[in-house]
Length: 73
Image 1 (tube, rainbow, N blue to C red):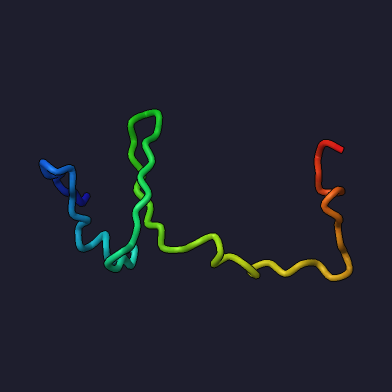
Image 2 (tube, rainbow, N blue to C red):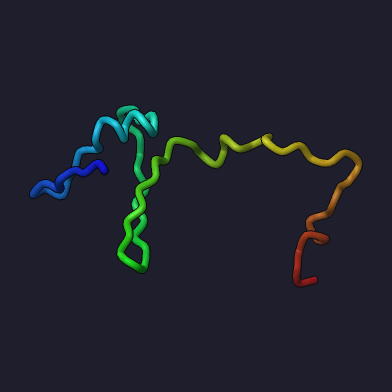
């Protein structure tokens, strides 16, 4: 288990083995989430949602209008 200490300024250093594992570079943003049970999850935000554009090809010949996508029609 890897650990770090929080300074008086509220800062901490991400341990080297963790930085290597997540391929962190200077400027890598971290997203902190507090769970109801007190667990803290830290996730490296190294990809944008825009990076996912084009990952799934649209089915050929099947077009759906925006109105048909609305669940409340």
